[in-house]
Image 1 (tube, rainbow over the protein chains, first blue to last red):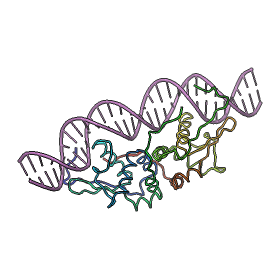
Image 2 (tube, rainbow over the protein chains, first blue to last red):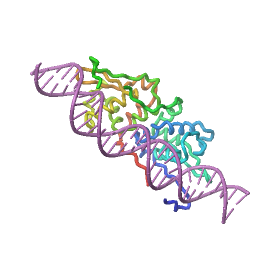
Image 3 (cartoon, chains in turn green, red, purple, blue):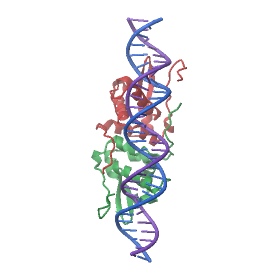
Length: 117
Length: 117
DNA sequence: GGTTAAGTTCGATTTTAATCGAACTTATGA
DNA sequence: TCATAAGTTCGATTAAAATCGAACTTAACC
């Protein structure tokens, strides 16, 4: 299981190496859009994974945060037993201008995509 | 199979009813990003599905165009035996400002997303 | 040391998406 | 009318993602 390190750590990609489809992929899930929105709206700009209101269990939640991290969207720092996550605003805006604004203004619910008959 | 209608027709969603994750989903596939880029760069702004260079067969191609159509990204009109597709630029820019610009500037190849070990 | 709180990882299952071949429609043009 | 070109739809297969429960780590606190 590789917990061998003394301290757990997260790795964050360099944004220049993140490509568009990866980011789109990350934001294709309503759950993750909700996370990013919550973080953007959070005072202090960060929030414990635990505190973001979601209807999924811990494991799934952890997974979604990892996807967002890998897509360069968020930064996570360790704070005792909890981990505080924030949106990499400045960097991300520089790399993908306008995207975060779209997330911010997307307030609607996100029904599962469905083709018409 | 429902080919009963005299003339084949496409339905295009009203953009206000398209939500962000649906669009993101549509653009999460490298193949589809390539299509949108090609259309944006095409002279006359439109192109026959057939003409967009892709490494997939007809059926798959048709599928990708349908996904883009359902996400409100493109408009398809019938022209004899072929169908000309164009990006719904104005409308789409009004609904999701900046997104098309991102697609346009994304020139890199799009490797399949992969988590680090 | 024991307990709890917060996350992570694994393994398995289910869901959703991508892909293709084959059979089909439709319009065009010889 | 027959053939062809351009797409679509179906059915099946494969490949990714989402989701969960359970076992685990790590830090904090008593």
